[in-house]
Image 1 (tube, rainbow, N blue to C red):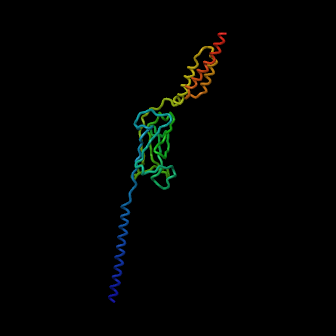
Image 2: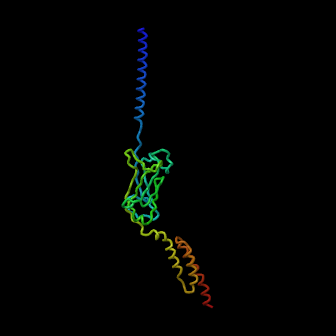
Length: 235
């Protein structure tokens, strides 16, 4: 009887010991898993150039828009994709660019799934441009991407560039040159008035960018009518 009691107690102790060892092994495994979890790397965003030059450059602004180049670091830490194309990933999305005036009012915006965006602004807005802001937005909901400290991944640069005096004048520069070509071919004797008129009509129909071509055509047209005039004078 005592022997059986001893065997029962020994078996119970062994089971308890095995359970304790198993519990320790499981807790150790969980601790190892927790130690290998790596938090997401903080992202940084930088505006690297405006119209292909350093942001602080004082070059004149262009009428066809302001090209903004950004850099995301680390590049492997964020995937550029459009809104609603990222599944459930918080490290996926697009670049949002704002053109700001001196009071931080938005003059124009653009979204880009590359590291380049073109801010197209009317001439009045170009004259008010004071800064450019870039921010990473999540593709899952369009909200700003944040780092571990809940700060937004964004960048901003001040812009001190002069605006063009007239964007319309820049677009019509070729037509002005065409007008000069017509004026040169219009010089001739009184008997060439009909040819000059025809030459001016031909030059007017041509585009401003091809202002040089109508000049040659008009010169030829001006010379042809002069031969009949000379013949009639001799008669």
